[in-house]
Image (cartoon, rainbow, N blue to C red; front, side):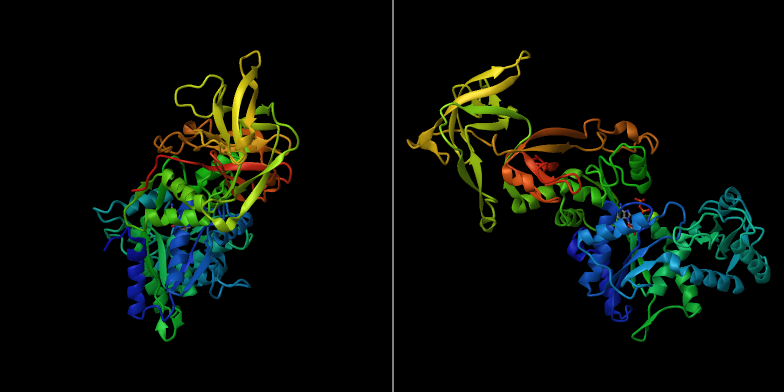
Length: 571
Ligand code: ATP
Ligand code: MG
């Protein structure tokens, strides 16, 4: 088995086996469980493709479950944007749901049930209240090689435990004073089995439930309960949870004993957990905490800044859902942690946009060219909208006496092999005609201000009537009809491959000071009406998208998605 072959990866084989053995009760149910404490990033996108993708493949359901069991830092703004971003990636949750919305769950809606389950564990002697401090508790837990030390509270009676637990819930204790622990095995080589904490006290209001609770369930307790009660069959998560799996199964066993497992078509659904490697990308940070820091400290313009690895940032940058998916597929679903090169993602974006993006002309660093022998009105040039897609048709662009070209396309005296515009040298103006510069004017600093020259009237359309060869072709924008535009040129946010190499305190010093450059230029008339989010290839320049928010009719703003070419080749 090749684990990186995404079409047959190990998670798929595991699900297949469960289906074949009848463990799913005829329906594969997965879930994507983000915590609404930030926007989702490309790592989450990978989990989205796995969780929703597997459900789709097996004709099942994927629930969207907001894992809002941790009261601090959660918000509805995050929740709404998580939904928006998943939909943009091309997925829709389905299934019953715990409210009005199909397939949608809030883990916090299960708090009553979780509390009841905790009381049941206490009554069965399977959980107890403990008042060790966190440091004491960690010291007692010890190291895998040596058995841990039991808490002095380990053998408190269920009656007394129930009393303390109810007092915890009633708010009689301060944060950290007591917690509820499962009574499992203090000698287990798996330290997650050494009487893990199930509930802790936190006097923090919940974004939906307000002050209703001051005790909150831990992930290891809450997650298997959520999965089980929703009837999830296959619960996929990242590798760091592999060592938690025995505890997950322990909780599911208790739920089974309590008769709480969902029965589907006569089959008792026992959720199973499997783990895959996280997606890591070089030259960026991905933890929501650090992304939030970039936003709150103003190092970027927001969660959707086009330099951010967030889904909304990539959308604003002009990346496509298809390219992100292709990237995740190429990285593959494996059990081995690795780091991916952002150049692979950019390559995927370029591959797709090359096929689909509308071609247009834009001049980002304009210098004026005057065609001295041009007489009369402007004429229309007709160019294809996409040479790779005939059905995209053509467009007409006015061309007249004065045009803009990119400064880099002119040299007064051409260097060797410079086949673009130069005094005394012929160049083709894309789709229009052959032009020869005769002179240029410069300012006091020697910067070219205006170029003059003449066109060959017999070359309308671009080729010489006598068949003589002209090596260079450059793009242009007609000065009279061209529309002023703003261009935002993005580079990587960090100059260092691993910005966290000195720990999470030092990453800011590796920020790229040139990650955003804003320039003004001109675009061909049609681009003046570019719709927000519309993607283009600016000929010879790069792929751009009209900004989702800032681009306005007559005053377009374009974000550079990727440059046109790169030496990167995927393995
Ligand atoms: P972060 O550490 O970036 O803040 P998280 O793991 O705390 O992320 P959650 O909202 O808990 O974020 O994650 C939701 C789901 O997305 C989980 O199933 C998690 O395993 C998965 N996920 C998060 N980051 C990645 C990643 N880099 N690669 C693959 N899956 C990920
Ligand atoms: Mg998390």
